[in-house]
Image 1: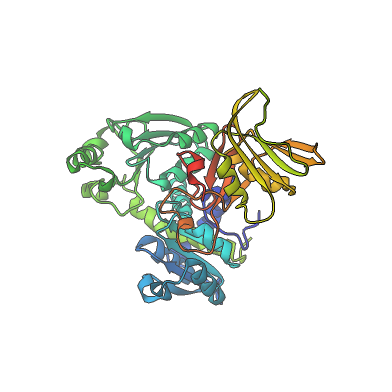
Image 2: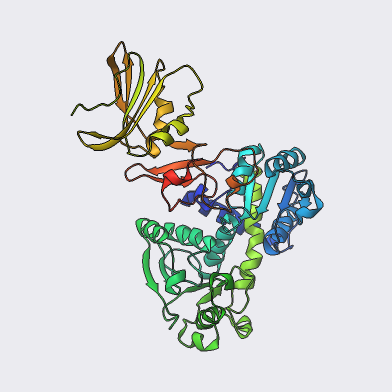
Length: 308
Length: 151
């Protein structure tokens, strides 16, 4: 298993054993991620953080991960302050940035931009989200959260709820969960249901699947993964309100929930989860957000070759 | 009725069994614009033993099979015949290549390959029969007819 110098463009770049290895290393990183232990593991290394579109969690947790390990960060959070404003191509921006750093994290609105960056850069590229495309580190931190909260990934019954059609991060997550022999329930209105090819791929990997249109009960579910239903997917605002309302997680829904069921959400949320849930033991989404730090620390350390 | 309405050629390449109506696209993919000395004959919608087809004959030029395989996207049943002194010295069917570079564009407007970047559009062949391809960059599979995406 060799991570040094590798690009991370999609979760499919990893075999199952490699995912497990990253999660194991992330586990070891926890005391450093919490600030309880100090580390100089990445001292002398520079990460370029190239964010061509807004991000709160991904950018801050990557930067925190690098700094917690004693590394340095350069980059931008708004392309308006760079030569991109003058019409510079992404390829040229990448070729420039790579001469100043050891690893590049990129978020870009165009799908496939991380793949393009990987073609032009000799240093490793980590995809921090490419448009409606892929977001592999989100997927890894979701897996890490399930493992930590539930003591393992295998054997859990996991419901994915919301926009399962267009949200490609949820496609990656379904794929990754299928590698771990989980049972999955896809809950979405018909027009936003999981695409056939993702369903087929998950089945092929041995996942037990069921597909539902209604969030009628959460009985028997171990992990409820909620995603945002985007308003722009609906031509009629009234239709949106109706659909979004019927998928809202509130205290009523939790009546039949398992004692130890967790609720996850990649955030930002709008109205999908009632704030009243935040105070319950089911709410795992803020811990999930924190988990971005140890997982990204693990990835950086493995890719830069300071951990094998 | 005799099969061919165009004369046999002495030397060169005959691309036969092209999906009817696609002969001009085949020339476009091969980058043959008729500017050189080669005589090029095109027959569209001719009736052959197995129904209608298009035929392209390029005189005095032997096309490399790797080059010609690019047309498999729009003419999967085409055959390539290399002719020397009126004899067919080589004959084979086109094979869909593993990668298709610079021939079709990605229909996803948000794909980076449609931006002003120094790259050619690139597709990976997932399945040959029936043909399924996905964009190397955005990884989406075009839902429309591939012929309509030819650059």
